[in-house]
Image 1 (cartoon, rainbow, N blue to C red):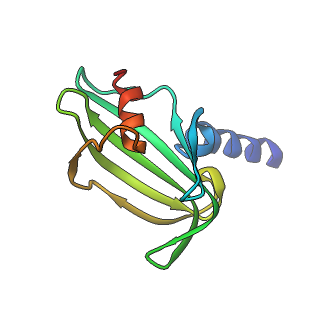
Image 2: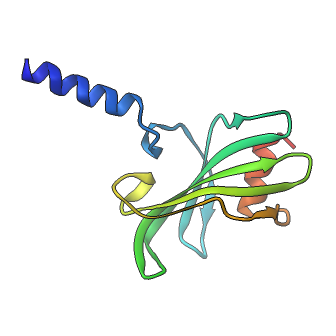
Amino acid sequence: MKYVYLYWVFFLSVSFSQGAFCAQWQNLGFNQDLKLTLFYEVPPVKKSSNAVLARVLYNYDQPSIDLKIRHFSELETLQFDCKKFQFQLQSVDWYDAPMGQGAVVWHTQNLETQTVPPAGTAYDKVFRIACKK
């Protein structure tokens, strides 16, 4: 009986998890300067005709240290306004292991709305995929 209970606890925790390991990721390329690989979750979530939620994963080759916090990966949830060419970071999570696994070592949410940066940047690539431009 104990094993059946443990199986169900494991099954439910994996089934309802929002972690990065449950996602299907598309590789958008490697940034030689920052030594990181950028991934995009497919498919994005459309909230309305103009708004699209997208998740982006930065996977560092070496641990990154920002705000004196060591982390191996960063998961961002963004909301794009496809008509206004703007986005808002809904949340940012830093993980102590690659590919959005391990413990969250830093979190923030609801940052200010920004205009999508110029062509060729990571946010521009994700915007074009999410909004199919």
